[in-house]
Image 1 (cartoon, rainbow, N blue to C red):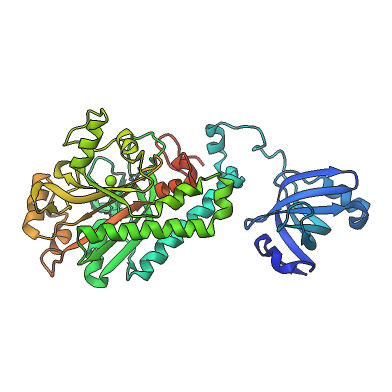
Image 2 (image 1 turned 120 degrees about the vertical axis):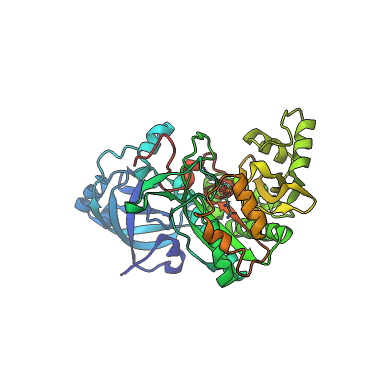
Length: 431
Ligand code: 4AD
Ligand code: MG
C-alpha cells in the first residue's frame, strides 16, 4: 500500500492507500466512526465500520481526539452525499499520538488567546488557507519577475546605515564596528545589482521599529524589492501593474478553495485585474479636499485618506509626483517642478491601503549629494551608493511590495497579523 496525499486522492479511486495526518473532527454513531482527517494538502472524511475494522480496533479508534495524529489505511470512494468529492472507506486506523485537550475548539476565542497560541492556531482552516495563499503569491511574484528578465539578488539584513530614514531603525551592537541596523528595505543594495545584472529583485524580511498599532503594520514584514536599469517612472508603474495583475490571476486560478474558505468576494478580485487608476499627489489632495478632508499639499496620506481615494475604485490607484519633503532622499525630482519627486505609491482597493512604494531614482551624482547634504546624511557612510552615480550611472527605477499587505488584500484578511506565520508587532513577540 502506498502513502498518498489527500490532494491526490482522485487519482487513487478504488485502490488501497495510506493517509497520514491529524484529526480535524471525529464523531461516532452506532457501528460507524467518522474522522475528518487533514494532512496539510487537504481534508477528507474517513468512514470506519466496526465489523470491518474489528471491535477492539474500533474502540481504540474512538479514543482519538481533536488534533491527534494518526495513520489511516483504506480505499477512496466517491463521497456519499457530495458530488465530485471523495471519502475514505477505512481498513485500519493506527493512532500515533493522542492529543490531550487541544485548546482551540469550536467556541469563539479572542485574538489575544489565538495569538498566544499561534503555534497551534496555524492549523485551523482559515489560517491554513491564508498560508497557502501566501505561498501562491510568493511564487507568482517570483515567476513574473523571472519571466521579465529580473534576477534574484539577495540584499543583506545587517546593514551599516538606513534606507528609509533613521526613525524606524532597529539597532544591534556589531562587534568593534559599533552599531549595525536591521534592513528596512534592500533597495540601496539592489541599485548596485542592476549595474551587474540589469534587473534584480530581493525577497525577504525587513524590519521597522514603527510605533504603529494598526491592522496594516508589522515590525518584521517581508518585502520584495525590484530594481531595473534604463527604466523610467512610467515604465516602472507599468511593471508594478503587470506584476500585481499577474498575482491576482494566479491567486484566482490556484486558490479557489482557499478563497472560498475565507469567504473572499472573488468578484472584487476579478474586477481589480483591469487598468489601474492614476493620479498625482496634488490631484489626490484636491479630490480629498472636495470630499471634506483637511489634508494639504505637503501632507502624506493617512489610512482614512487612502480609503476615501479608493472607495469607488474597483482597481488599485497609483499616486505619484509627491512633495520631495515627505519622500525618501533617493527619489528623482520631477522635471516640471524641483519640489516634486517621481515617486509612486500603489493603493489597493477595499481599504487594504498602500501595497507598493516605488520611484525613479536620482541618477545624477551632484543632485543626489546635495539632497543628502540637505538631509544631513553622512556622505562617508553612503559613499558606495554615491559611487554608482560616478561609474556608468543610468536612469533607473524600482519598487518594494509590502508582501503581507498584498496577501491581506488577496485573501480579504482584515488584519495583517494573520498573513505571516509568526507576526511581530510592537506589543507581541511570543511565540
Ligand atoms: O513604501 P516603502 O517604505 O518603500 C521602500 O521601502 C522602498 N525602499 C521600496 C523600494 O523602492 N524598493 O515600503 C514598501 C512597502 C509599503 O508600500 C507597504 O506596503 C509595506 O512596504 N510596508 C509595511 N508592511 C507592513 N508593516 C509595515 N510596518 C510596513 N511598512 C511598509
Ligand atoms: Mg511608502
